[in-house]
Image (cartoon, protein in one colour):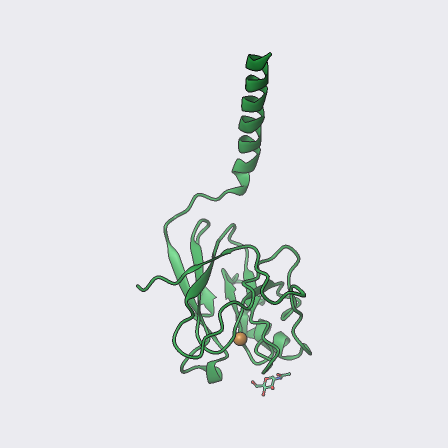
Length: 178
Ligand SMILES: *[C@@H]1O[C@H](CO)[C@@H](O)[C@H](O)[C@H]1NC(C)=O
Ligand SMILES: [Cu+2]
């Protein structure tokens, strides 16, 4: 009886591991650093670089500059509004100067355009152009410039969660100096 139970447990474990496998993307060890905020561009309301090309399995690492930015995924058609099932860093990176102590990191899961914005409403960051893209389709008219124009026309940014410190779709990890 004991032996039979052990086999059943082992079989279940193996089965669930097999099921989980397709969702995992093999890491490439490539990291793309994106700075939320800027010391030079657009009064600081800028992601730098805001147009990144990445492969499946690459890591995106968001480094936060002053003052209190966050990152949320949206669709192209509805800027400044969270995409269902998308990523959110949470407002966990306020810093008076320099980079925040932690970064937000997530894995590129496919090569479809990934649109994102800063949901800070104090100063209308998304409407003022704090928005970006990973893997824009350069043959499409869905450009970053068009996304920013559309963003400018939205009223107030939508928050992904009632708890501003929630975060999902990625990890908060210590900011290691280069
Ligand atoms: C739209 O963009 C302009 C130029 O950056 C800015 O002055 C204006 O405040 C923006 N609109 C909103 C609602 O923030
Ligand atoms: Cu911001």
